[in-house]
Image (cartoon, rainbow, N blue to C red; front, top):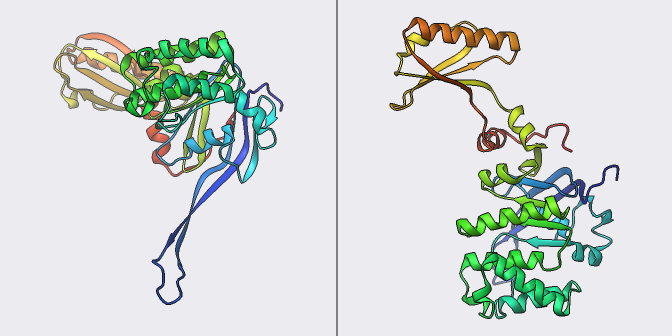
Length: 346
């Protein structure tokens, strides 16, 4: 490996097949194949995650995010390509990898429901060779941190969905692994618990040097915590860049001119070097929104021309600001189009 990645997915492919059968033939007693469908969950996916980095993997439902998480954890074997954790091939070193990876899968499938939260943590800790006083102390600390201290001796089946999700996060952290895989970690959590998880993720990466892979549908969470973001669509990585760079790359040159009254659209028509100008008629805060070309000279001329036009029409200018692109808008732009990978995926 040419870069010090803790996790590296090296050009993997994965296809799943589904089979639909007819009812049993009463004469032969056999089921006949009715339909066979294939789903490409990963098509030449490649990216790496460095120590101390939070990597967000985003995509629509069925895009292949959970498949990528499962390949890193060794739960799914790629058809092509290789996956490395801490320099070790996941396929060849599964037992060693299990001790280095903590996984939270979407939903509440991690914990054992007849056991209590404390018993779950002791069970999973022993599986990962964490034992004795260290294990019990760490389990108690995690349960207190996540807000399950009062429920530590209640059977998991009696917990709410959100509480089961909290327990799943504790299970992922019980062995203090260097790699954390979080598949929709804040699903079902209240605001305070979600905030605690985000703070914990920052602590683990910034202070402890762990690497974290997060999949989420919450664009605000991804934009807030992720250092880099990969967007996957129909099994294809369509973008993979640092978060700020991804937002800048897709950011149009859009400026907001807040004015003292709602102008007539005719008043802002045909401004020199302005590609488009629209009125957003908020009664308390009306504004003229203009889109200009990227060149510095052209942009400067367009902004001066806009201010001159507003002054000509008797509009008082309250403020001027550049409109920032949101991760949600970037995501929608990339996933609405047919899947097509972009260069520079690492």
